[in-house]
Image (tube, rainbow, N blue to C red; front, side, top):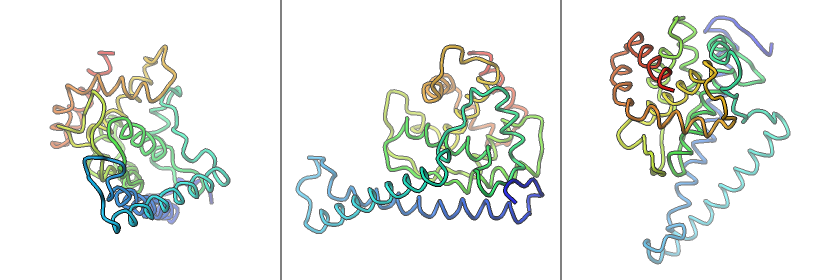
Length: 254
């Protein structure tokens, strides 16, 4: 049983959620390890001379972080090389594929819905904030399972609302870059709005001369930045139809 499309309460669905939760435990451990690795100032002169204990704790934390990173990359490259690959939003029919994947429970491969929104969240958060940051995959999977219970013609609008309500982005780092969408907007709203708009643009065949997903995420972020407050208000009201119209207006801008 490797690819099952049963009900939301099937054994496969719970197994997928448990696997994502286990991975999130490891991610959380590494997040706090990276946080502790900065207790000695991490080379910042303004922190002054750290204490011996702070230096020792930070050094051990950095060693632990390097070991966890190396072991994770090694296991993934040996067992499932494509696990961390971002599904390209430029793939024809990607919105429909992601929508249909809300009912997919794979015990070997991440459901496409999870794979796209989780990996896109990492790419977008990495662009706009410094590490460490923490993104929880089991919350993306929770959004997927809720969407499977309530089919809607306005899939992207409903997906955006559900993802934001489940809040997969638990922590972001200090903002960086010229655009700083996390300063005045809740990070889950900014990140998943960018991810949804990117899918919408690509579905329309808009990224004609762009083949790099990160570059296109940046373009989508710049375009929707002035409208993030309106998007956040519609999400708070759970206004699916209004949000669908807003996304359609943004699509027409590009």
